[in-house]
Length: 544
Ligand code: F6P
Image: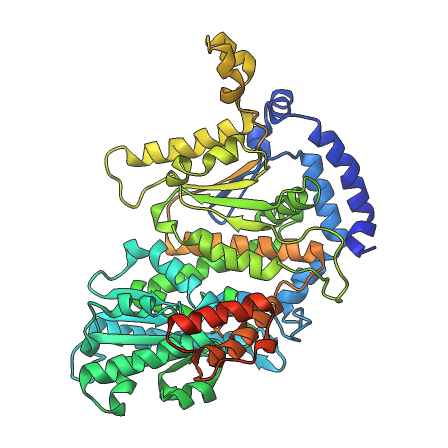
């Protein structure tokens, strides 16, 4: 048996689960009038109301005990010290160093990483100022009006999410686009109305080997040279790179003077606040970018220093474990009530699922419990008119986070009151539902009672933030990063590797020549389904 199942706290929680599962949220609230104010925590500008969860103060205490028994705080401290907690890749995990203030120092493997971070931030700021001021000119002497980030996964999802989230703070006279998919449509649509003379490409790739990014970067290079009718010298004015791989960048033809580096201790999905955030800085400027880093850092300090029972990301992570391992919940929804956060669920999908979608412990033992939940979501109120039906009356338990803001960035009429009323109404409806008795009292026809009954008892957390700013976005992202860490530590997995993405990549490399070559592949090289699909594609493209 694994350490998790063997732990005394796990066994206690199994018993406690039986008690909690037998009580409805209606009764938990009725029995404890101060529940709605007590089961809350506030830090760094986030108000976290977890009272509408199927949990009590005792649950949180027991879950914190589980985390301690499994040495989660020690693991957290080891991460902040720069120990190689990513054991399968033998790497430190130091995204928290990306937002440490200049005055700090953190020596890891003999190097002060905070000094390195600020050197890069300073170079990014100088570059950003020169582009935004128009001092940086394209090959023909025109200023930059279109910035296209080429990257995928962590080198795309963070930048695009942050750009969309912080659009209100961004320069509107420069257009930003994000090309990730190897589907040529992505590149074409991003460049259809772009003038090469005014376009700057940021090629963002930690490894600088990723198929999609390298393919899009080569296409961009050709598009630029064709458009400008220019020689290779134009590349230096229209391409910069963000990578850990200086040799790869140079080989591509980008001057390493135009490269912004980061380090192997920054995981792709934890990199939006590294140089991978160059597009964010170009959009909102260095001061706002710095505010974002401060927001991240505030949550880092809170996570590091606060006891687990009052620690926002720890409570969130432990509740996710609670639903996953004791209630068998397979998914977790995130509903931001802000149109600016429309890419936030997609961003969280990589953060949570690439981190915690693991079937073995860090020691390589198969787990005998569920790990990473399937994260998904859409902004409210749109989701309410689509899939909320299943969340309210379907057969699955779907723990959900509702993210709301006290103040709108676009205060039109009473839109914000209407928006936020829906946050509160949805969580109320999910928790308390509507009984058959209530429906009868309202005179509802008997045959409709089963259809109109809402069971309630559906768990939600509400995260209330004053306003969407660069700082609050940083705090929110760090909140989820550390929740993911907490979950992974309890599950005893390596949340910082991603071996599961490799097999498909390798097989695609083998299939590419089989699609393209003049000669049909050996029929014995794949299973009959794959062979048949390859054959049909080749035939459709006139390759027999
Ligand atoms: O395929 C998954 C992955 O390795 C992610 O972990 C990473 O964020 C993404 O690909 C992009 O990698 P890179 O930044 O090296 O191009």
